[in-house]
Length: 481
Image 1 (cartoon, rainbow, N blue to C red):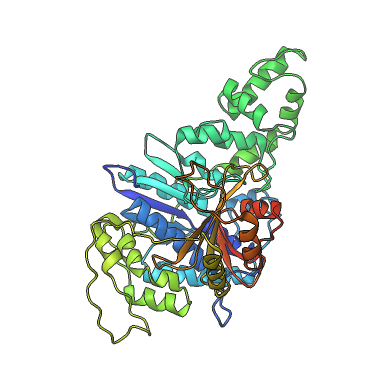
Image 2: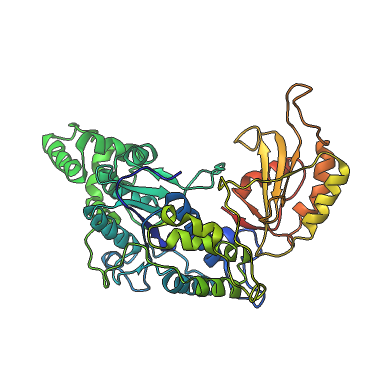
């Protein structure tokens, strides 16, 4: 449900963060990701566009801008040659996929792609967020990068939509992070995130910090001394008073650590700070304009992204002038011309009282229906249309959880889904008829263990551990969000 706000909403997207997330979510299962029949990679394009559409429909923004990194070294690389130097270069298929995605974003969706040579996408996002807030926008930044938490500002209505989660997380949408959320996750408010990283460093970016200072010590130092400058001012005062003096949580061996790595601390602060006033090569048009419906349909059909092709109306509604709230009708009435439908005439869709589809799941309660379901699942071999799989359990910890049921969905038809109850408990009248657990797992095992039958899961690690406890392998995972 979108947030209630009197101001127009701007969605800023951390392009590379979402692109890498999409790429590795599909390649994790070992099948090499999604691709067309002639071998063109589509994992990045599919995952990115799906997430963009989902958030466009949920948030109903009136403006969208997407920031990407450039290939040029940034001022941070020049300040420290070790900055991010340990990161592997992405495979060539990633960049091929990214190129076709950026073409669709720019030409078919008419969304501004913002890049600034010499700076990172984070600096572009910081600058756009700062300018937009000054111009009266509510700003939401979609990213899986906690570095952006430093931009959160409740008073100016800037928040991060964080695509994170622990190993057992089963939620599929991003979490809205405001100032209290930053405090809960990092232990400091947004205005102290940079100083926190100056002290602790960040191994993922090769930011050194102060050796031997962890988050707990750093949080305590900032709590007592406010910021990095005050920490070192206190250190100077303490050292002037003698070797046994202590103040502001600075004492003992910590004094030597801070003194030795003072230069690294200030270098780390420079590396960690996101700039909010960089020059942009081109001023982006933030308000939504218009979607090239025919061009988008042709691109998605060419890339064999059929599930997205069926949602072109949703893209038109979400990313045309005014946003999804002003164009909802387009999501249900827009028809997509394809090679299969060209030249045909369709009746207008009947208006419905509710946008919620009347799903018709199949409840599997006898062996005959189970056998038919397995036969149906074994026929699903298209990597572009994986079967969605989910286990229902009694606990977030897979080593304690009991298996309650298994759900699958193999298409967008209202009846293309099924649920197998296994461990539901209640009164004799309220409990559904259920097949024995062993019978169900024995029947599903060949499909579950097959790498030739693509599957889509939310946190596959959890479901894999649940199934392994029952002696069943899980293979063929091509989507893992």
